[in-house]
Length: 170
Length: 178
Image 1: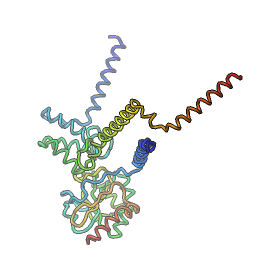
Image 2: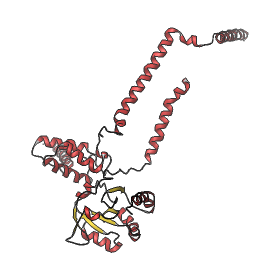
Image 3: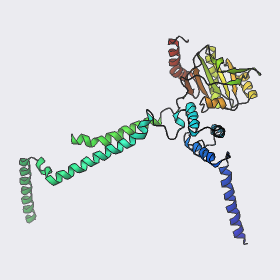
Image 4: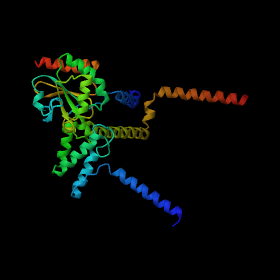
């Protein structure tokens, strides 16, 4: 094997190994796959109370560590997902939920954007429909005062004549 | 009329801008989920008297503060002189020594003075989880029936005491608890 190839292998092996050490913050292993999967989802869905931008699963904060261990124990002793989530909310409030429940105030969060979208769409539709109707029926012209229109035409004609004259003179 | 309608989106946008700008400077502490709930059950050793323990019932009988602290926490150090002041004023303060070592905690109280009526030791932070503690210092206001009335995150100082705690104390006075 050439020196170059062997150094590549070392590099690849090293990077694999470093990835493994990162992943092993503290992995709790369950006896069955299903619970392991539930655990993974739960620690991703629950926000670390200390560190706003991270889930319990992502954070290295001591409190996140404690909570992971607690959730592990709860799942091992047969708690349902609902029970684990309620346990957390009872203590830390809705703050820990990345997907807040739809109750009371949080309804605004869930339905507000949809309501805004619907209202915006309705406004758009009315604007488009109205302008089309106006174009078809010639309403635009109807809106304008006939007398003023004649006045404007006269002014324009006058301008044209003077412009033409001056054009000829120069 | 049409013209005014055209301005609406702009006004809406400005409104949102004001709202979000205000959000930047708002307090980011999280309201406690435990307000108006009884102090969670516990049975933990007393720091000052080895062999003895205390429970949530030890807090009942008078309005008190429960202060979560640890020697590892710099803000607790900053807060300590004000707690001394409060205890001299006759405020009952219980300490919850949180994720700390007993010898370090005792040395701290020896050196800086002990404002606490008693300290209970939550070495592994399990009670901290039941209390929804996010960090130290945190201070709970507990009424004489052992019900949590308020939680403050961060240090207590003269400003916080006057602006935040006094109104709650006035409320408790109205109820005849003080």
